[in-house]
Amino acid sequence: MSPLVSTLGCPEGDYEYIDVMIMEDSTPTRLIVDIDFNSQFEVVRPTRAYTQLSNAIPTIFVGNEEKLNRAVKEMV
Image (cartoon, rainbow, N blue to C red; front, side, top):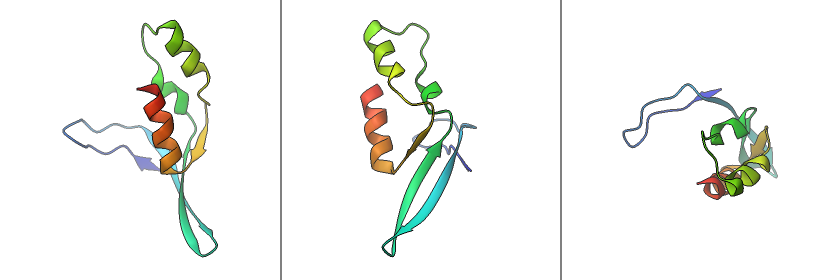
């Protein structure tokens, strides 16, 4: 598992995910597995639109960095 590291002056966190490398046609591909993905987007007073959007987020995320970045950009 990979811990969240400090970047850009933000404090380190203890959030963990599984970092997997697989081989596809002799090319390494990185997959990120997060078994508590949707909890990272919980807010105290969400708008109706945010609630609808966050309800569409899966509990478990499995995908590459590009897919993860797209999902996060949708939520911020």
